[in-house]
Image 1: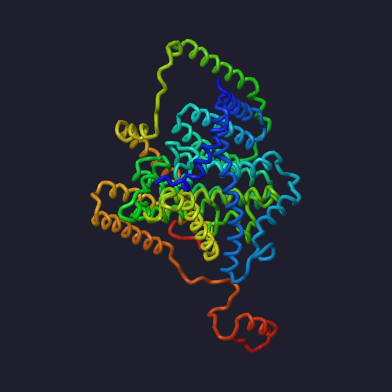
Image 2: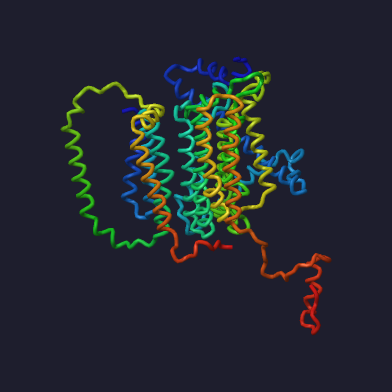
Length: 419
Length: 167
């Protein structure tokens, strides 16, 4: 099982450590473990910005960046140089110290979560026995950084954006944690390493990933929706809302500080996706047992890229929610389902394995799901939307725009105009 | 007295001291959060993972955000109020410190040799909560749920007709 290629980085580190004098070894070991994370994920961030702009371009029927280098491949480098050389503008009335600290804190806090992510076999920086708890604990630092950014800018839009962001993050943190509780209950451990190791076993050629269970599917779906909202991505990007509050809490930031916010946001998204992979998608384990010859870390990054592609797709496809829709989705729909999921895991755990267990758990999920969504739909009382400056009934003959322009000057004429 | 302990202790003390010394309430909250983070890191350094991470989650993730929101919603502190506490505050703090220091110095346990390091893993805590202390846990859960529902009831606007949904 321990192929040399699979353990390439682990063996390299051990080899390098052997050359370092013993007293300096703990520090050297820490540096050697942290550095690859500090390099790999910002690099992934650079690649993702390009992929995202390309992907969104394709979805919106345009090319995306294609001027810098072949196929626009050097665009992230150009962006980096641009943000480094831009003037750093701090508003005159801003709280300078807090204004400076916020982007630093957000970038630093976003990196902390990676400490417990199992990137490959034997490739976890910190095997805490409360790893999942650690992940969510350091995730809460980001909220504080967002508040600092919004408050210290002394701008209405920043403050509004920060308040929206914090309200949203607090609301969606609850289903995020509850969805992961289902996995913790099943595996009986808070350590990310043992959660992955339990999933990395095979029956025949199929792995024991948590997503291949009724509660795993529901848990994964809830986790990803909450992760999407937690990282302020479309369709939950109200805190940024370009058309309403311009850019939300980082409107008053420019140059490299802005880039740090951008970096922090994407790192947060990668970290939460990495946690979803760890909890539901079997971490670094291969999807089929005969594919284990491919190194474990490649599987992790492949899964991460698939999830990122999903995020980009969703961003290009769905419109932004409204604030009340966002809140009612979290508290009326996702939260009850997350609690239901915990109950289903309990049932799953105590039933003997077999087809009956599958059937019971699926029914236990589908019936409340249908009931809840129907009830919520009834409460909402959907009706035809009316607009203030449109004449009803709208006739679908000819182009409405053309009609309005033509009839407008003649509106005062005695005979009534048909719209 | 390892260097790590000294650094973390310095962060904790400096943060809480700054929380008392600074004038802007938001700065005070941020400094206090830094102090609490330092204490959480001290717990972690002592091997109490559950206590440390819960400290981080509750104080930084919830209490600090709540305090910040409360200050933002109820702003305009009058600067004259500060002066009334200028003498009594330090006096009370010094008295409290003296009592605590006296109690710690005269306690019998400090003279005993240190017991072997207790290892309270998250699993042990979970087992204890779910087996031995399950009734207190349930009662606390019920109490907190009641408090939550009470908060929602208080926050609801009684004049608004609940059956009407805003468009």
